[in-house]
Image 1 (cartoon, rainbow, N blue to C red):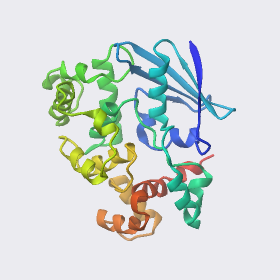
Image 2: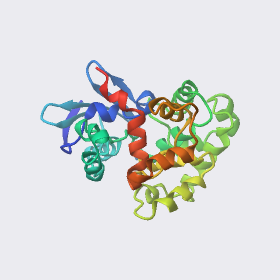
Image 3: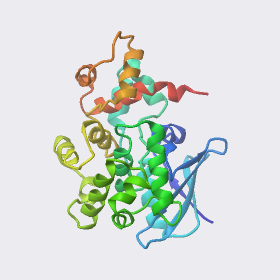
Length: 287
């Protein structure tokens, strides 16, 4: 195994990023909480499956071990996963000015763990809709077991090579099978430009509408994907976070999405991230 270190922003927390949302529970991520090592597999542009292991170093860097591959590509993947190039100074300024949010800056939270590629994030998001978390985890695991030769998430080409019936019955994607098959084809045929989405520098509402055009992506999934792309205006609540909001604010009934949006509207472009951090605040105070 070869090793290199990546410098970190001063406000980076390894544990807070790893546990920022459910992606850590989905393959090909595997986290050892005792050793605090995050393992991950990815297929590089040459078709090789790379095995990576990442841990926090005392010199405030990430130590990355890998078995093979081009170091520059691996650095790009790790930077994406941990969002090392994202500027959260606006969030921390907002938190410093609000006593109830000051913990956000104190805990250095706000970086939401991403997959090694937008393609993987898209598929995982589609697989979180209209089902339990157990089903989500099973679908992602099945995709890897049935389609990928290693332990990495399958490429669009691997998915497109399967017929819809296989995806529906063997991988157990159900109604999502044609959506995911079409998405893979659109990427391969360049009808959907993931690089343009990844590097979006335009209006976030325009991007939101573009994401909604992808079959299988509704308002919750589109808003959640925006967060993974660095746009935080949409709270995008789901059934779990609606109930958590009701519990936190001692409401007698589950709030509507518009009520949640109104509650956070004063945070403007950070509204969706503040919402998510408040809903998960207890995660960051576990021993």
